Amino acid sequence: MTNKKFISELNEDKIPILEEFYSIQGEGFNTGKAAYFVRVGGCDLACRWCDSKESWKPEIHQFVKIRNILDRIKQTPADTIVVTGGEPLTYNFDNFCELMTEAGLALMIETSGAYPLSGKWDWICLSPKRQKPPKNDYFEKANELKVIVYENEDLLWAEECAKKVNKSCVLFLQPEWSKFAVTKNMVVDYVKNNPRWNVSIQTHKFLKIP
Image (cartoon, rainbow, N blue to C red):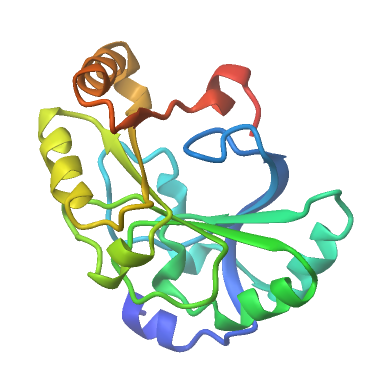
């Protein structure tokens, strides 16, 4: 079954889930905030440094009813949901967001922006990828621009994207983890020379928490 056909056959009351858990946001603007994470299965961007390659094939993941997700969230103190992937917006999140908002939960999403925006979100973290650039409307709506830095070309890509975002969007560069000894210096030096940018690090990996 092709990915396109697979997606078209999904019901909006179900999404393929790689994992869900209550933890601490480890990176970007909301670092340190407690949140319930919903990691969605499925992504065709194939980033070479991806740390969730198991998410690439949506058909291997369990279909989960969004109401069941809400039931599990209610068993925790969480007041915020972070939807991530994979690439979550491969799927339609209108029903998901409506249900979670009715329950009084704040909604954050981390997305490459490669697919049409669905759902209503309190915070959009745009993490654009060169191989499949974001759709234009994401630049206006993004609250946060977070670019992963693996090589020098990523710094050029970051500046290209930064020219398009709205004025209130917060800018982050994040050292790629597998080359952290190198990328941390690239990012720190760049931010010192370009102070409108901020450094994001994956604090959850240092703290060894999910």
